[in-house]
Amino acid sequence: MAKKVKTARQKGKPYLTKRVLVSAAKAGVRQAAKDTMEVMGYTIIAEDGWVVRKDLKGNTERIEQIPLSATPAFKLD
Image (cartoon, rainbow, N blue to C red):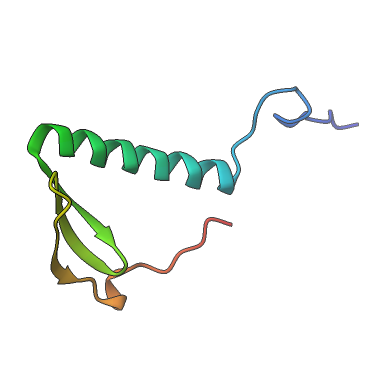
């Protein structure tokens, strides 16, 4: 008879889900943008389909629109 393997959840360990992964990635990007703003005085990020430059005064400058074909189609599920 084959031995049954316990999953991480059954062992009481946390397991990685899409929700946890997306949340951690978003938090990391936000923190990196905040740190860059403090050091450089501006940050360049993607927002609403555009690459934009934001500065400490609150100005936002659109640099270039992101083409739809530039975003790869992949699923995490």
